[in-house]
Image (cartoon, rainbow, N blue to C red; front, top):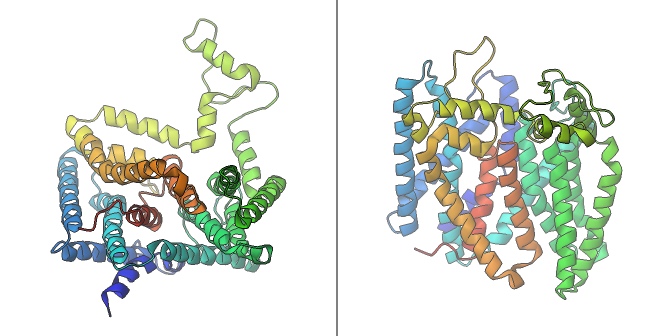
Length: 466
C-alpha cells in the first residue's frame, strides 16, 4: 500500500462515522457495556493518529511541535488527576479518565489531520473536494437511515416524555443532531456545485433528506441548523449577485434555496420542534397574555432589589430573562451556575488545574451519576481550570484566527459558496458546542469539526510544509 492510500484512510474514516454510530447503538442494546463499538474504533483511530504524529516527527517540524504540545497537555492532565485524588472524595477514576479521553480527542485528531492534509497537499492532492465527498457520503447515509427508520417504525425516540422527536437508528440524540447540523452546509455545497442548470436540481435531494431527518429530531439545533444554512445560501447568493457574479449557477441555486426556505416556514407548525417549544414554554409557566404566577419564582415587592427590573421585563411579555435563558439553554444555565459556585469555592490548585469530571461531586443517589453542564467551553474551563483551559484554547484560537484573517484579507476572491458553507459548518459546530454541548467533548462529533478546520487551514497553505 502506497503512502497516499494510508493518508487517505485517515480522511475516509469520516465517511464511515454514521456506520460506527449505528453499530454503537446495536452494541448498547445487545451488550450491557460501556465499551461500545464506537468507543473501541474511535480510540483506535486516536491511537493511530498519535502513532502517525510520532512517526512523522522524524522528518516533520509540525509533527514535533504537535507532539510536544500533546506531551504538555498530558502533564497538565496528570496534575489534575494527582491533585483531585487528594481533594475529591469520592473520586471515580474511570469516569474521570473517560471524560479526559473525550475532551482531548479533538486536539489529537486535529493535529493528526493537519499533518495528513499537509502531506496530501504536498502530493498535489485535491483535499477540498475529497473532504466534501466524504462528508456528503456521511450526510446521505444519515438522511437515508432516518427516512428508513421512520417508514419502518423502528426509529428511536429522542425524548422520554412530553416532547416528541426521533433519532433514527442513532442512540445519542444530542450528538446526531450536532453532526447533522455540521454536515448540512456541506450537503448544500455539494448540491450547489452539481446544479448548474434546472435539469440537475435533483442534486438537492440528499440535502432535503438530511433536512427532513433534522426536523424529525424535534430539537432547536436541528431546526435552527436548516434555517441558518438556507439563509446563508440565499444571502450569500444575493451578495454574490451584487458583486456582479451573475452566473446561472448562482441564480438557480438562489431560487431553490429561497423555495426551500418558504416551504420550511410553511411546514413549521406541523414539525415536532414547534410542538416541543410550546411544551417547553408551558412548563415554564409563560403566558403570552396576562402575566401569571410561576411556581418557584421569587415574588418581589416594591422596594426590593431587582423589583423595577422585573417589572420592566414582565410589563409587555410576562417573560423573565431567566425563562429566556432556559428556553435557549434547556436548564444548562442552572448547572453552569452551580459549577461556577463550586469552582469559586474550590482550592487554588483546582482553580488552576481544574475540578476534573463533573466538579466536586458528592456520592450520587441510586440510579444517578455525576453530570456535566453540557456546554463544551464551560465544561472545558471548570474541568481543566485556568491554566489547562488556556493551554487547550491556544491551537483552537490560533488556527481559527489564522483562517479568519486570511479570509477577510482575501474576501473578494474567497466570497464563494465553498468558503461560505464550510465557514457556516464550522461556526455551527462551535455555536452548538457553546450552547448545547456534545461537540468538543464528544469524539463522534469533534472529528467533523477537526476535519473541517484542518482542511481549511492546509487548503489555504496556512500550515507550512515542514
